[in-house]
Length: 284
Image 1 (cartoon, rainbow, N blue to C red):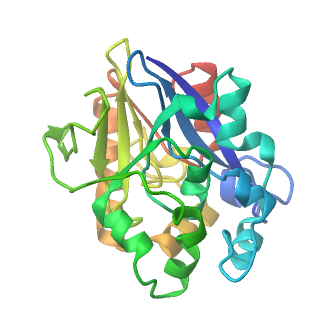
Image 2 (cartoon, one colour):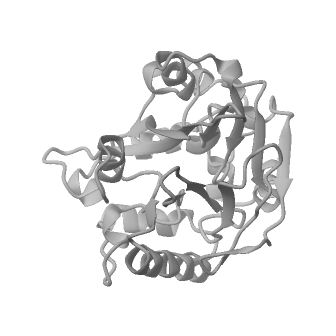
């Protein structure tokens, strides 16, 4: 099993280091960290998709834009075709049809925009996330985060309940249809009610947990005292559906990242330093 770490979308919000903790100029740098997994018997597996080709070509097409203008301006989203998952899959020598499965942490617009670029893939997601994303949207955040035009053309869904065999103290959804037991959905509600991490057992026996948006900043893991930039702290609060659940799960992940560091790596979806270290094969 080979894991590629991809950046499938870039945000450059005004605020620089107040968001990413390191930029020297006025704009920050936030990524959309996705995984492309080569398996022996199950084809390619994507974990999240970032933005897709149709997002790049027609992000604000009316009457139902794929990305709302208000959200694009707030995050200063840079839509680049070369960063889409499909173009990066092709650059590695594969075709869209080689991607047989997509496992989603959740269905926010910056995680699900590329689903339609892989029409033959089976899409795995938590049932609660699917219900919330495709049902009536109440409130400003819900109307902006879940975009019907990104999801309406997808038909090959596999949806899962939130209970399963335990994994490091978390409830885990095992036996994802058509996938090996080395891939698990780990429910982590709070950012959304159906939010989940995706755990991947590597060939060396270590686990990689893609924690999605359970946290946003590297300083929130691997140390006893949580540290987060003001911009990302505020954005997490804006997007959460339940602060208590989000913070409780984040605390559990932080403890896990410290206590099980020798056997487990935890990475989130939006920290550029974590992505760079993963791409370079360096420890987090």
